[in-house]
Length: 178
Image (cartoon, rainbow, N blue to C red; front, side, top):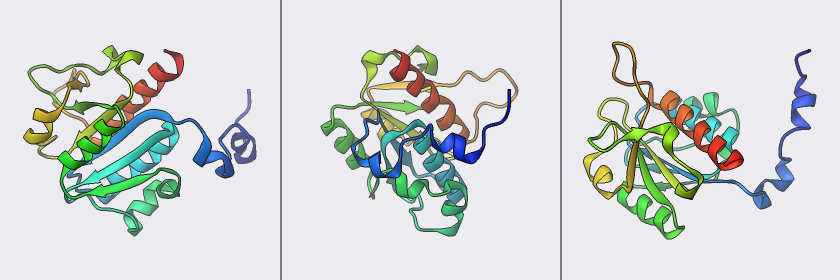
């Protein structure tokens, strides 16, 4: 075993020239009032890695170009299609127009664990909420389902970008191996 070089890894990835026509994982990420520019950048990079359809940035979520976003996104703001919506309910409506079920990543009275989703749940709109207050009540009310990440320690939540990454990569696994 040996570590792959950057060139070796690049041969395994979708070429930039083919990105627009390549089949993407049928997930739209929605950022509901994320406040940290670094979280936004990290979410862009994770979204690129999972090769999702796009990101919808909502409310006061910061948008590119910002140096803090660019620092953590490492170019993913150019490879992940994104749109800004002042109102997150408009973003959900846009996702639903594409046939997506709205799934909030939040602890609710009806949440199920993130690893219970199946290929039949796609296309999916995955909503991650504010770092302090979570997904807004109006977005939860408009959702088709809720998933959560089980917490086994003292803390009741993870960093927004970390939680998004865990859920998104499991969704990508389900879609690609399904």
